[in-house]
Amino acid sequence: SQQGEEDPQALSIQEGENATMNCSYKTSINNLQWYRQNSGRGLVHLILIRSNEREKHSGRLRVTLDTSKKSSSLLITASRAADTASYFCATDRDGGSQGNLIFGKGTKLSVKP
Amino acid sequence: EPEVTQTPSHQVTQMGQEVILRCVPISNHLYFYWYRQILGQKVEFLVSFYNNEISEKSEIFDDQFSVERPDGSNFTLKIRSTKLEDSAMYFCASRGQGHYEQYFGPGTRLTVT
Image (cartoon, rainbow over all chains, first blue to last red; front, side, top):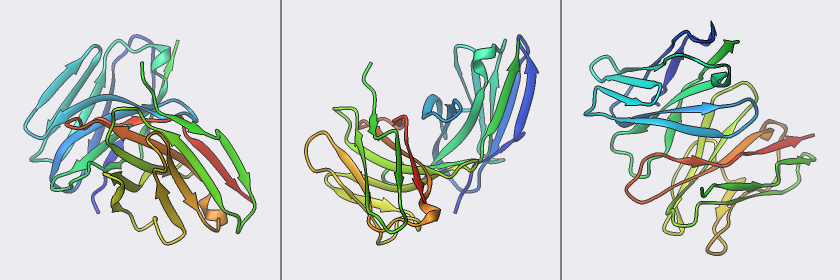
């Protein structure tokens, strides 16, 4: 089965720095999504990039997608302490009819004030 | 802003007991999902539900699991005879027609003793 795998597993940066997280997956996709999870809480959708898109921006977030390499990256610019959370990529399987998501293991981001 | 709600937030049960986890999806959404996350691990897809029937289920979703939409608002996950390894956070999610992003509830922490 396909899996999204993020790296690094953990990332610690200072406030104001940029954070980059990467994700790889195995099979064809309709789209790739990034979610955020604060400790012990539910997942919050951040951004979606379709398989025919290469880059997308939303506020301080920038997502890229390289379908030839089956990889994506999430860049958070000018990070804040409040960005501390786990970030997951999730893929929506191409040909899958109902959109069930396959999540990676996540990157735990710690932003120090 | 509409949100997915889940009850209870924490459920403790003894092995072999039945549990029902409840979710109220966003009112105009048509696709419903259950996921689980064992502590420290990734979020795993359990089942998707559309048009009053299961559309897809994972290997985890065996005969001990069932889902139901008993009325126009609730969406439930039942585990008939819980095992220790069912201890996890269970997340409900929903999405609207023509949209791929899923909205997650805050989760129910299930502890099986």
